[in-house]
Image 1 (cartoon, rainbow, N blue to C red):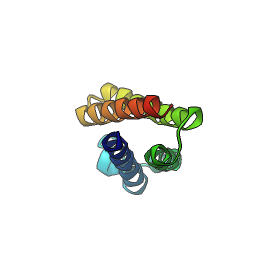
Image 2 (image 1 turned 90 degrees about the horizontal axis):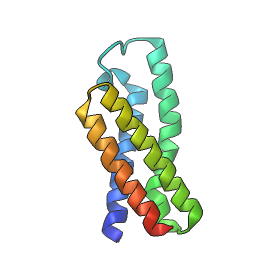
Image 3 (image 1 turned 30 degrees about the horizontal axis):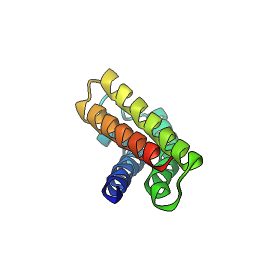
Image 4 (image 1 turned 135 degrees about the vertical axis):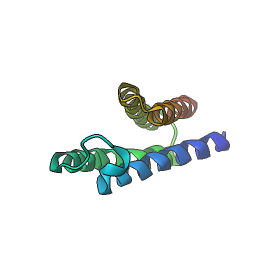
Length: 114
């Protein structure tokens, strides 16, 4: 089970990395129309929400069990599933696969700590 917790933390750290990257250099992740003030604004808004959620998803399984930590992980799983859906709409297989795998692992860990 500890291996699954570590995998969960690694995937959450990956989400954290991409959220920070999006906030600093959105043009690295978004190729179409990534050069506007609005793009930077929304990338930073995304990161402001994603960074704390990624940290929470990475740390919670190591510190707590029960309903509330499980719900935190399910929130992280939903966020990743929605990221995967956005990637599907953009035909970005990396975003689809990454978000789907992270959502599945977050959900599995949520069930285990519930």
